Amino acid sequence: MEERPWGGDNGPFIPSLRTLGAPLSEGLLRAPERAPDSSRIMSSEPPFTPPTSPQGEPSAKGLELQRALARACENRAASGAELVRETAGVLLDWLALLPEWQGLTEGAEEIRSHRAGEWEALADALDCGLGDLREAQGWRGTVANWLYTIDQLIEAGRCGEYLAHDHGMSVQEFLAEEMGLWLGGAGAGEARWNGAPLSAGRRLPDRAQCSQQLLGDLERGEVICVHGYSDTVALALEAAAQGGLAPEVIVSEGGPDLGGRRLARRLNKAGLHVRFVYDSAVNVWAARADRIWLGTEGIGAAAFLGLVGCAHLCEQARHLGVPVAVLASSDKLFPSGWSLATPAWGPSLISLQFQMSPRLDSSI
Image 1 (cartoon, rainbow, N blue to C red):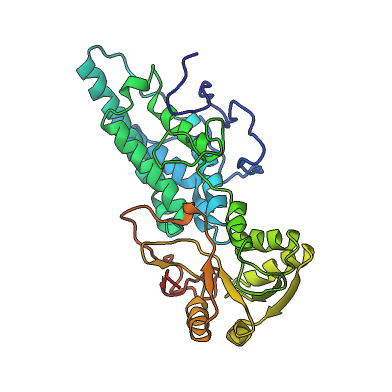
Image 2: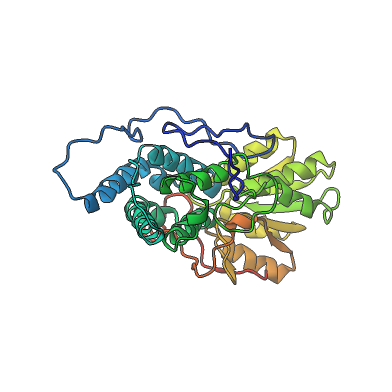
């Protein structure tokens, strides 16, 4: 079998729930197990609809994808990486059920024109299917990068960049290859990804690696203040404990979702000394901290998104001279041209999870 230049799994695209051709090596990201959910089951037999023109078919398929992603759009507790793994799996399932849009053509210009039409049809379906997800979850840096990669791949396909590599493949197989790489399939590897669609490299970085860059600066018994829940911060603190640094951790409630409670329980199970405090008192406790660690869902050119209370906490730390670090992996960096924004539901539903604070200067 001829190898594909972008480092995919080199296996045929199977029209069923996607199983990547090669086993995942230890440490690579895996798609979460998904229990059957009637709201997300997509049938190859479409429901009855009035006859439509060929141009109407992509929109019908787009609505099917939109329905399949409805639960992901409403999920406000999952991290960006968890949402990307879930939605990439849903998108693979949807691609497997798409009809083949290829036709018999002869001549280079006819092939190019026909291929451009196929990419345009797929783009129309994705515009419809991913629209709600863009609005509901596109404020997360990881989700924004995933969507941006899809946009890049579609645009490259429209411009004919993959004509020399298709070998009779359907356009949806190119997108399926990229989704497989986001799920950590063969070809992703541990190498640094250059950001180009279909190129080799790990899409979702290992958040545990972030902690290794911090441990060298820590001294044994330091007091670290944390606001709310962050998986990256939790991994760093657990690594510090395993390294014998025995940090004492001050954990605040973390806004309306009380994510700090979840973090405090996790750290307590890991054997760390944890002091759980109210959000209203975290500024007082910050004066006793040696450093403050914050998590984030998105980093822009000069700002990052933080939980409610981050702005006040950072101002207090600046006044006290307590260093503040935002712990984040590279997938939290927003793509070029994308602007940071709080979620649409944030300003009006202040009692719900992850209401975001104002933008904060990244040089803190």
